[in-house]
Structures are given as C-alpha cells and as structure tokens.
Length: 254
Image 1 (cartoon, rainbow, N blue to C red):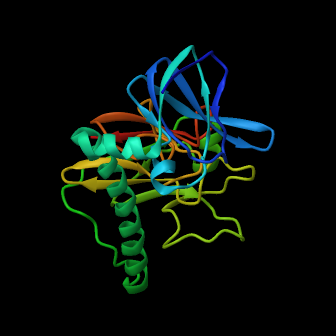
Image 2: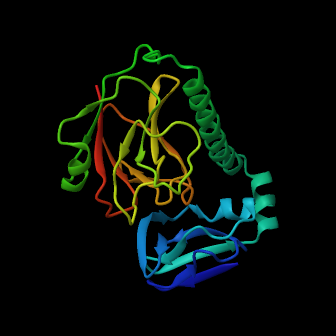
C-alpha cells in the first residue's frame, strides 16, 4: 500500500506496535528517540531504504519515532508480505542476515570479553598483529572536557567506547575501554560503539546503543539498516549519541 506524507507528519511513534515495514520511495524521513518532552534526532533514511523491519521480525514495539523530513512517498508492507518479499529477494535477505549476524557477533564478542576477563592475568592481554596505527581524538569542547585534547592511541582491538555505568545499570562483560563520565541525561550508552578487526579491515560497530552512532555521515544502530561500517584510511568522523550530540570524535587510521 502506497501512502504520501507531508513534511513534518508522523509515520509512527516510539512504543507503537510494529504492524508494518516502511519502504521509502521518495523523500527523507527522520528517526527520533523521544525522551520525555524532548526528541533526539538519531539520523535519516532516504529512498530505497527500509525502516522498522527489525521491529516486525522481532514482534517488538517501535523503538523510535519516524517523521517525514520532506514530502514523502512510502510503501507500507504487512509482515507476511514482507517475509514473502524477503524469500524472493536474495539481496534483501542477505542484508537482513548481515544485520542479524552483526547482533550475534556482538553477543559473541561480549561473551569472549567476559571469558577473557575471568581468565586474564594482570597485563596479559594480547595485542593483535599487523594492526594499523589507530588514534581516537575528541573534536568538540564537550568531548575534550571528558577525554582530554590529546589523541588516544588504540594499541589493541577490540576497543570499546561508552559511558561510566550508573549504579542501577548492569552491563554484560567488561566495562568500556574508554568509559566517559557523562552526567545524566545521557547521550552515551555504557557500551556504545566498538572498534574491531574484521578480516584485514578496521570496523566500527554500534553496540545496540540507545541513540546510535554516526560514522562518516552514515547512521548506525538498531533503528537503521546497518550496525557497522568499515573505516577508511585517514580520518573518520564519529558522532556518538545521535545528530547534535556533543560527543564527536575522529578515528584516524595510518
């Protein structure tokens, strides 16, 4: 079923049932996380992209609000019709499998870190071979206030960036390698994003954070088509916590 929305209209709200998948045919949508009276812009989706497919597949309520950022034409696809489309579209099925694989990889990585934390001797962490030189540098005043101005040398992977957990929060596995002491209200999650080696490339993966991660202008996270992105040689821009977040970084590979 095709529908049109004017700029500013709401397609669905955070907490609504996941009754259908949205395929954007023309225009741009904004993905928002509502926190009380405020709404944080997590990112955007454009023509050719699906929104809300994971909520449908998992039978879970919407985790974000989606709003038309321009005049919009979309297709609403019911769950059964979406599954039938997936079964006849190898490219779409491949994309969904990659997304699920990324989530499983995250779980395996957390379990591996937990196992290593139990068995590791002091100073016994291994350093992977043949890593490029990797530096993480804060680029905004707010981020520099918490982590300093000097670049942070990443000597081993995986390397996780997140927030110091509040007393009531429980996280699986070891805390973040760089745990930022952000005060509430939070933009960062305790385990927000991770740098890791996949094959011979350095990747950045969002760890199902609350507000997502934007890498080289590409939004990543549970509300977007992708969870991770291969980093390019040289500088890579990273915004943790949605558009407008004060936590902006550059990851440099050399």
